[in-house]
Amino acid sequence: MIVRDLMKTSPTTCTPAMNLAAVTELLWSAGCGALPVVDSGGKIVGIITDRDICVALGTRNQRPSELVAEHVMTRHVAVCEAGDEIHDALKAMRAAKVRRLPVVNGVGSLEGILCLSDLIVHARHDGHRQSLTYEDVMVTLKDIHSRHRAAAAAGR
Image (tube, rainbow, N blue to C red; front, side, top):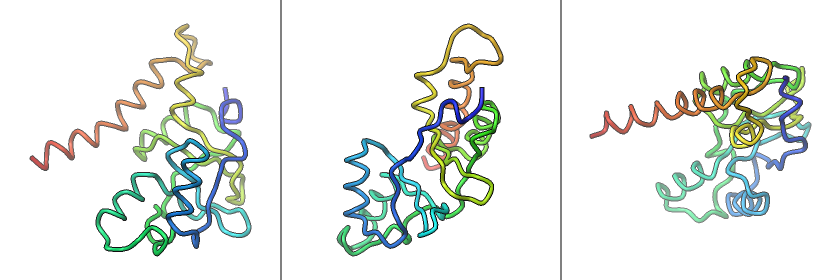
């Protein structure tokens, strides 16, 4: 099974210059928690999450319309390609501690997005290694969230 089989094509995106009020509206309208940030040529330059926006607004004395995506987005984005094997994409998610991977082509242009929440729906319990299993998804989710538990424990 490859990423192309499970990725969302044509994901909603935003630009680096888009203000956070507009980005929030896009997130709400699309019913998602993250948007790839792309330049005018369609190349991914970052990713912005609803959490990024909440933290930015909670820590700065500025209105959402006064801040732009470029100032709060994550610039170093873990990505995969449509032809990658799904288990390799899960390894990339675990390594980067992310639930979403933008899917790019060979020149870095966005082709889609792979979301762990979508993978949960496609997971099977048959144990066949060629398929995506519940265990594959749960191990990935556990590894992603292990960082949060360690950070929370250290802060106590």
